[in-house]
Length: 96
Image 1 (cartoon, rainbow, N blue to C red):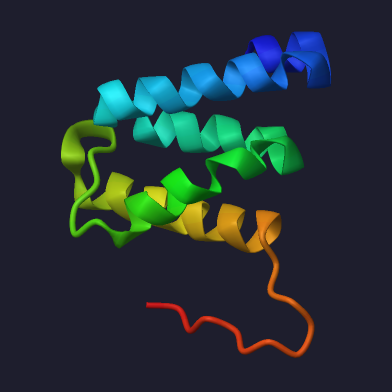
Image 2 (image 1 turned 45 degrees about the horizontal axis):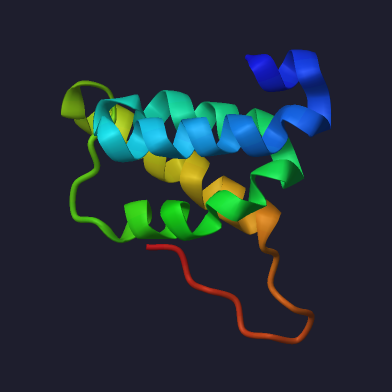
């Protein structure tokens, strides 16, 4: 991935490309979320899209299979928890 070669300076361009790919072709969702996971904190601008995807009844994902959808949900929740931890003392969201 370009981000792994170029580092932090390439993060905005990579992030924009990933989010556009996911918006234009939902079948890329598993790959996009996997890349976001590797980007770590630099993927924080993707939080709204991650939350939007988790709110859907069905996500695109690879082949629209249950296994891939569950993987997409698991990684999405992990990313959200890591990128946007709850404020100390604030109530935590209960998992679905």
